[in-house]
Image (tube, rainbow, N blue to C red; front, side, top):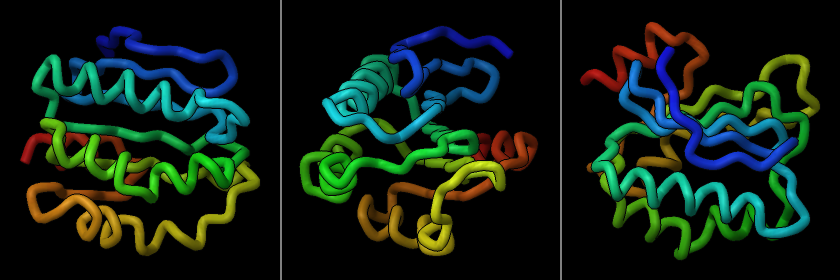
Length: 141
């Protein structure tokens, strides 16, 4: 796997460019941050995406024990975040969901694909998967 670190915040997130799948890979170790770490990571990822005409985004929350703070949940649900994504070059999103060992509530995952399409329009495709072969195939479409 060829990857290049774009952004890292110890204990919170690592953002990589994954050449092998042609995607920005956002690996959350915890999604909870009382400050602005979540927004900084997302902004760094989107800046790289736009500078490099990246089409694919892989968000991995499989090991994240903690969900977003209320402040960050409001931000990712709001217009500022939506506009960042809508105005980016992104076309495909994959989320690797929380694994069974995390303490996360996973009830929202069933609607994630539909909500992603609703929030970002028909030019964006979304998938929930933990299978790298399936993820690669989705990104290659």
